[in-house]
Length: 329
Image (cartoon, rainbow, N blue to C red; front, side, top):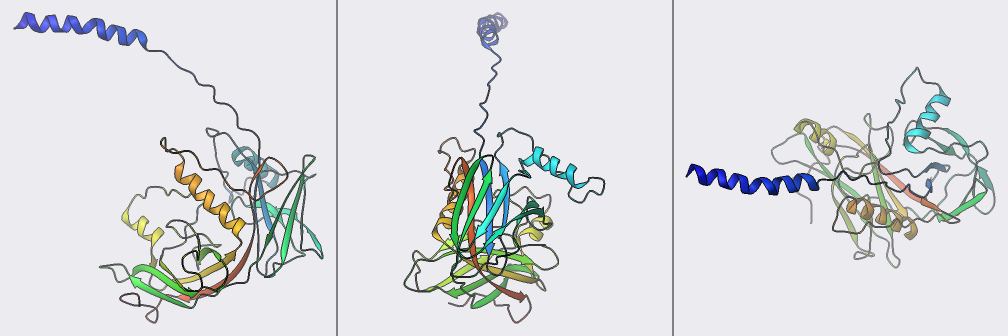
């Protein structure tokens, strides 16, 4: 029996040696992506325009965000760090304008501490008005990029409820409903803000922040459940170290004061955001083809969006007047 075992081992050795000799180090030179201008621009009802410009980067390029609260970093160093880490575009020769057909607003470079990537271009002469059209023009490196959008008439939320999570007397979800205007297709974007926690409006933690009335035109639209706003640009969320951290990120709690912003948007902006979520949803999946972004930026090699938001904001405090055991039919 011992001899047979030794014989088997000797038979396997040539096979192992052959596998060992077949190993080859493979180096793949990934092509650099074609340089693109990335535009993130919006004009809200009652507010001037704001636009953030970056250029695309390679998939494996390192991203190291500088500390925006660092007192040791001056403005020029911070801008340089953003240019290197996220492809921020800051060029003194760059010209951005927004026109409503009657007047033109020249956007100025500056900082906002509420919206990533913090450094952008901001208007001050034109505020968004429902029913008006707005043309964005970007003159950059001898090229002209442009896009047009409109601010749709706002739609208001009618009713809001809060339900506790099962076996919990503090945490839960908000829910709301509103009446969709009849006779034409509507597209919506949803953002919210917890007072004292969020410095700006962010999409809810769960899923897409856009929806439409394709199957509910002129009917009551019910949004349920509404999770807490998530202060991040990432669609895929990170792992949480504890149940407490997860609960704090996802659930509203009794006593919270929350601003809910329901915005009407046009079809082009809806299509962009729809393609954005499809693109992120297929990233890294070997069995699907990456979805292309449906940008509404014209004039050259560019991606991104320019969008008008007809916003309606409602502020609620989660107290006993909002609490229901179940949602009404």
